[in-house]
Length: 202
Image: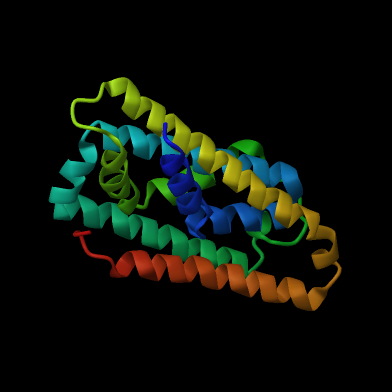
């Protein structure tokens, strides 16, 4: 596994997306514990997408417009619901301290948010082959996949630590918490609209 691959994977994982927004909002609402389980869910989804991509199913998804659209709009609907729930401070989706959310529910939400984005396996199909020489053994694909998975979890936990460090100070400011709630809600909505506007190609 080359340094170039790890650096590229790090930059990709660091880029704000659905998983990052969810992990940050979970950490602010429930602390390090909630952030950890949210990161676990997002990482599991990454593993599933990697398996799908490596099995060649992403190529099928790429050529099936109907299947792609069905998955895409399911993801859009879920993101819009997340935006509404965060904006209205609904229980476990609140960025304010509330009754602890069971780990299983945090993990499941993280999986759903990322699984319902059909662009992810397509991305892996385009990304991973750049680092795989022709005729390479399957073991190399598995190694690259595991490397990306570990990088995903490490980066997400970095976000958790950063969010948890300033959490108490943020919670003391009503104005800041209202701003954060609207920001996260807007982020989920924007990600949903972005996904809705993407076509089946690229």
